[in-house]
Image 1 (cartoon, rainbow, N blue to C red):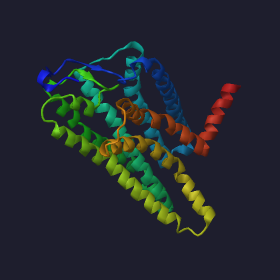
Image 2 (cartoon, one colour; image 1 turned 90 degrees about the vertical axis):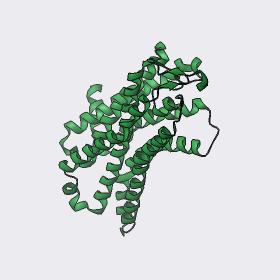
Image 3 (cartoon, one colour; image 1 turned 135 degrees about the vertical axis):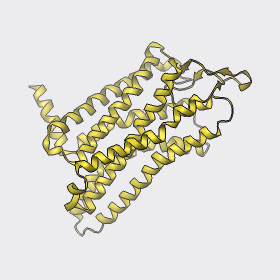
Image 4 (cartoon, one colour; image 1 turned 60 degrees about the horizontal axis):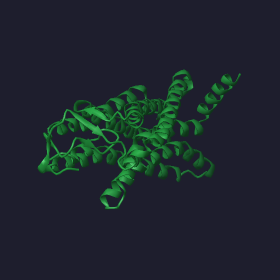
Length: 314
């Protein structure tokens, strides 16, 4: 990476390096990416179609699941095709404006998914604490308000990202050592004082992932408090089983980002290409596993999938 003494003006075109250090393996790396993309699309489209067709699934929990699947589809659609273009066709060039667009939409869908997981934790909290008022509290009008609130937060939190990046007028290089346009890698190759950019990046993490994780933890703390007040062990197990799928999804979603942030804060010597692969997992692993987890752990979903497979078998 060149020094700012030899800086260049804001380029019209950036070059996405893919996964630096593993260029010779891009062809092999693309195979699991492509497989993940196919599984994700099939799985989430199946979930959405089942929930739309099956009237008994028109409940708050499943409507939130349909929202989650929709966001997952959007997330992989704006992520994986660009990566595969780099790996398969060496299509590394991206215009500055297209880079800014991707910089906004990719984290937007991630932040929206984090918010939906918080809404699903709230759904489980209401189901266990106020079972008789469950459908009243989480009526369709409330779900619409939740969706609009999540959208508003996403726009408010992430709109500054492309605006701040646009203000960078000189760069150390036009090569972004990443497989997509992310805010932090673009800022780090900029010249001048980038302290406000770093501060903004930390604020985004705190206002989205940090906020959601805190209230998800609070929700499940209250859920556990309510569950362990139930005298029957069988009833406790049944109550906890309704949260199992959601807890699995939460773990898959937040583990990569928490690991990455902690590794950087604590100064662990992690190879750059490994950090990039982990960052890619933010956007790839949860959308693939979400429909598999809910499909395997939800009785209605399993019955519909088996019915579809049986029809195709015939």
